[in-house]
Length: 117
Length: 114
Image (tube, rainbow over the protein chains, first blue to last red):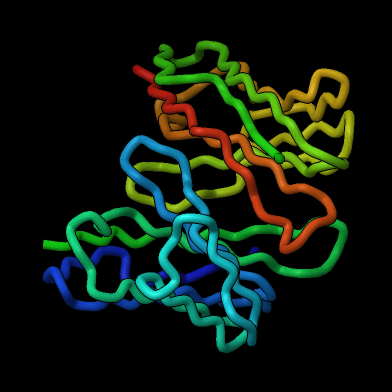
């Protein structure tokens, strides 16, 4: 089945530094990638949606300059948390949507636990 | 807009008990409905789905039926196991619109005790 590889699974960074999270679709073309943030014991909050080769669409309240999303190819999307601060500590999950067929499937990465110290 | 309301947790059951997690939705058009499961420290895995009214999704002993008349997609399992302990999310994807974004419920934590 469809697999999305998300790396790193855990990262600890110092306040003020930037962190890049990668999501790769391993055996399908991801026309659309979704980036979510999940707080402890809470649901997923959609941060942005990106289509290959175009700018990401951010949800209301999400800072575009802080959370940079790049979807340069049909198999790779990256989320860069710039100038990270402790309040950015969270669990980030990507999801790729494959096009085609009667069911537009969503495949999730395994998530990245970001801790900013 | 679209929304998903699911049963507040946490839910604690003994092994082999019957499970129901309620989920209702509000959406325009004809959404596809999903249940996802999240094990601790992991991403989401698709548990089952239904794409049209009266469809029944099933997987690993779990079932849910797409009920358009009651706008519901309740998750059921006849006999839970300890390994079913996880957070369960009900979600919908609206037909039409841009990018088919998933709308999630808040999640229900299930704990199954031996």
